[in-house]
Length: 265
Image (tube, rainbow, N blue to C red):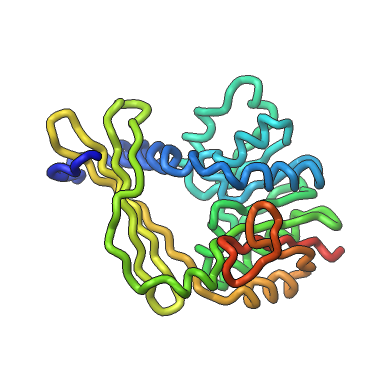
């Protein structure tokens, strides 16, 4: 177990240094989560190419799907995330992955898709206006009978969580560039209508100090019925609702809410 030492003042770092560091920390933290990959691969095999992933980030889902043979389009608002992903596309995958910097609530692509996916809990981070705009963009780019699938934390479980958690050490890893240890601590705070998750990354330096980086995500606590009604309202018929990546029936105690919508026309 590592002890978190004195925190170095990150104000001395240039903005480009921080922008370079955060995608690395994010990827190292979340790339270990692979339980959902067979689910997305299954959807791709059912629907075919090409696949559009919204909020592709550093490529946790895009890269494995492309490795299996999927023709991937990865869309993300963050240029830093996309640059990190681009730098990790191997030569034999370059023809299978196209990257687009755009807001998922306001994108325009000429191509249409039989499958559009939004993994990684991102959909519940959108407010109502952004969700509706995203859904309308999705419908405009889906082929007839095309599928749009989102995966988010079960909102029922989020509402049951205590209002506040103390930060706890979650994990640690070796930084791939510096070789220094990185300690991750996380916690949450539930307020009216939202829950805020915070992760702090302590990059331990050889001189005994640490650089501190923080990421947070804000998730809506709207009910499952709200998400389903919004799908229906824009022309997506909800064909399946799953509670996990094994396609189990959704219940209030399920870890996830996975919604599959088919374009009506």
